[in-house]
Length: 247
Image (cartoon, rainbow, N blue to C red; front, side):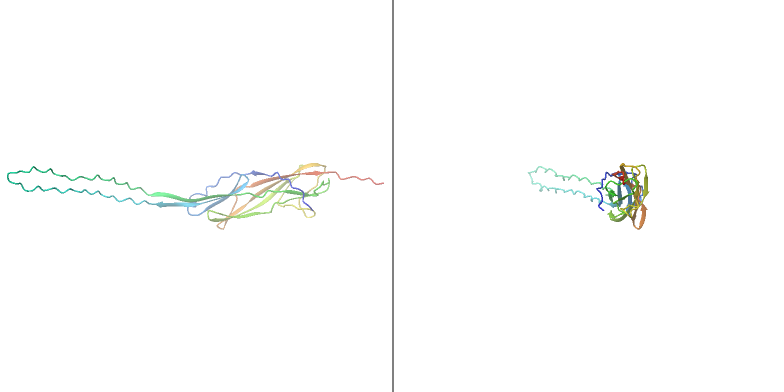
């Protein structure tokens, strides 16, 4: 049977706004630290890895300036009856000294890797059967097109992280009745989610999907902090069954 048009006014709802835990601290200098949590209705995957490496600077050797001396001129021997005037003495000119550079201390540089990935989860559509004017006192079969699991593998700061999530569902049939399940439902005759309306009218069917799960890194599996909820809504019109009189 043809599935009726799905009306989705799904709004992502944040159920937890968790900051990255303090595990991304000192041990992240050597080993990669990975954390997965929920924020703003999405899955956040964070990774950090890095340490410090010392970089030294070699001081420049000091060069001593050299002083050049100008040789003195020797006056010729005196001539009789003619006395030569004394020659002025020439002194050496000192070359000014160059300033010696001050050695700089070693400089430490931080080499670190930080990355953050955001994964959006699929939204849900709702279908029901019979799709056209279901009758009162007749079961209506309902289902959603969400997958029963959401798995993804990402690479962050050179590390492989596997994320696995599963949804659970809360149905509100619009007449004050609710159903909580992990089943996605299905059409007639095998669908497990069905509801019978006692009165005719237009009803608002609301489906709340709650995602939670785990992530695996370095063969260690941990729970994802927080949950993600998505909401889907569709309307259904239920009518009375026709009445016929026979003689």
